[in-house]
Image (cartoon, rainbow over all chains, first blue to last red; front, side, top):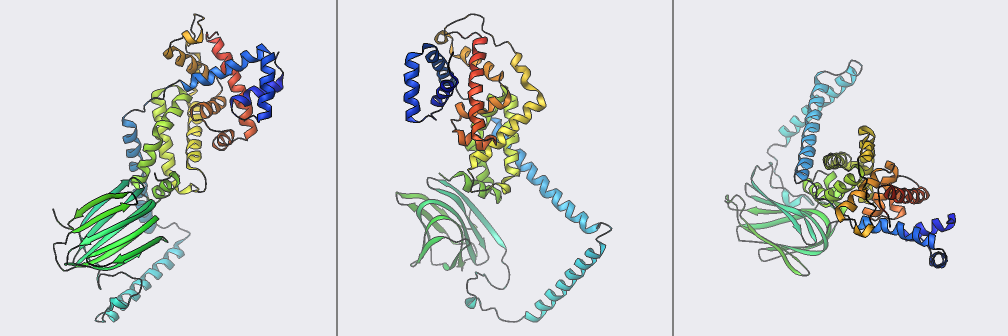
Length: 259
Length: 178
């Protein structure tokens, strides 16, 4: 018969939860109690046997099934959201009809205000150089002509870069998540001119611009937008390289709008 | 390597690649946890799929101060327990796992040994099976098991003791003799 206390100590020993004193006490007890020693060995063997069991490989289709189910659900929820919203607008419930009328009134008022603002502001000059902290490509939103997105899944760097080319503008959207400090370098020809950079999150970064080259030093996680003006309609080439302390980890030349 | 919490935050913001990375990182472990719990490959795949769907659906509720794997395994454990409840899968324990000859452990072929262990595992109550799987296959501490299973550490300890004792008795019953 093994004393309850020693059964607990045996289990604690197997789980690595005993103090050094408890372990010594148990060892002394096991040396003098063969039955307890056998019990201890049997429990240890269960652990050893489990350790010898191999993991199974999941079915090859599992990943695909998971991702497609998730995508389907996301699309479904989005669609349900749209339908519910439209239905809500078309068929407001009986009690909140006043709220509906109020919201409609506010919206109509907003539209009237927006239209009158457009009429009043038409013809006024937009001085983009005086807009601090705002990146703008001019008075009207430019149509994106081409976009190339590159995912990063590199040692120490995760995220991506999207280079968008619109009329006379190239915009580089960077999503960087780096374990260590990295240097992101954009090099370009004389057709491009660097207009500005904006960090969308708080981050530690420095920027150096000069000689058709922008160098961004970054660590941690942050999204950035860089804007270049382009005097060529077809899009000028940009060379993007990323280096960590250990050397170059990524390099690619991109011709926005190019083949 | 980007840590799990950061990936989860990105995935919650709609970054599909971050979610794919979570799936790549954990699908094998979750599948194996589920397999150890239900001993059926098809059911394990269904459970793993449901776990990741639930993870995706609840990413916005994930608290990034908490360890991501604890949250993930908690979902997995609950999904396994719900599955067992739904399917009354314990009948598997009645399958004929018994090895009639009383051979020394070392002489039992590896495959046969796995079958014995799986049989003994399936004879445990699901809540005991959970602690055994978390302890022996995932090598979690009492505290981590407590966090995942949502039970106090003291209960983890006592369930582990009882589960181990029952495993030993079940193995004896299935033909294991030293």
